[in-house]
Length: 112
Length: 115
Image (cartoon, rainbow over all chains, first blue to last red):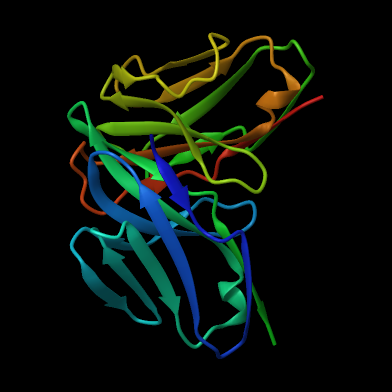
């Protein structure tokens, strides 16, 4: 079956660094995505990993270890606007197309 | 269009009523997905279209749910005889092709409340 686990909630202080972990067990693995979703809004793309290692993109970095079924999203220099849900999603290939399978999301609250 | 457009933005339905939710994907996008997102949860896959062909409907919760994309562009998700457990945000996403490298563009969703 498909299983994606991430913490339900996290809190952090403005200006700090926070790491959001994600573990997964899926078939047909074809990449891992992180999305940000503010309340009442659409998920927006943050990062994508298909090979092991770290991908850095400004204040956001994402890491993948395929052998461990593990990823994390690292947010640096936290700002109040980073308060949102962060969705870990695995792209699974089956039947000739790719499908995104989402975790339940991690709600991040950034405090002054 | 510039993004994925969904309508209506909000829908309140009485239990037992039929509803139709519309998705206008980005022009030219081949792949179209519907997801259901319950409060405090991640999006759950419902169905997938490649052009007008519905290749996967394994996520549809019951035979009350029906989706179509007759001309390979606009898609409609129909829910018959709505139940309270159908209350959720319904998200539509599109991508240029099935092998899209960077993921999908999501619409803002339709929030369905069944009373």
